[in-house]
Length: 302
Image (cartoon, rainbow, N blue to C red):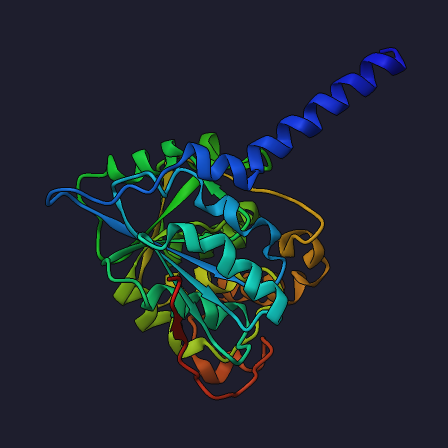
């Protein structure tokens, strides 16, 4: 490939990517639409902490989807200038978006627990601030006739990085399944790294919140999935559910992979041992940081 052609293709890609992720495109392409009628509706919970420049990409598609009743954004005490940027980004969508902030930084795990608990719907998609749900993801979740109360529904693909549709498509995972796979050396670590799940609000907060003082070193999804399965619940992979997983300079997923083993290693050993989660024994395996549970406050977007 000649240098001219290579530079031209690179320029087109950069310009296309800019437009695809741009705030202007969001406002032009995805007007706010609220639910109508008595059909099923869910909430979307988004957590933020600094790196706000990309926070709007999580709003693509869901602003105009009538099955999304509300979008709850919880900020974990970002820097003042970053938070002001977030307020400005969200203000045009205040009809559907609710913004909350805590003046104390509690970290990733409690921020996610609180964000889910702030939602009004019984079912909540817990979405990372820099990822985007594709319409097929929401369609796939709603194609399920009845959401089981003990089950978290998980996407089968994090485009373009992780695709587990052939390996685990439509599989249901429980604690025994995970233990068997771990002992056989066939444990699906990439799946346990995924997020953007459809969770039952009340069960999620009830069973994950008792562990909020643990501090997973990256790989927080491994920690939460282990805790969820270990307390008698299930994960179900929805084969056709897909979302866009962005990797960028400020990506927590990218910048903290070197820390993941501190969480993944103990989780895997506990699965191999068939050891269910309890706070006392888990203090030996995971960083534990006792603190005060501080409730967030709603920030008006008027």
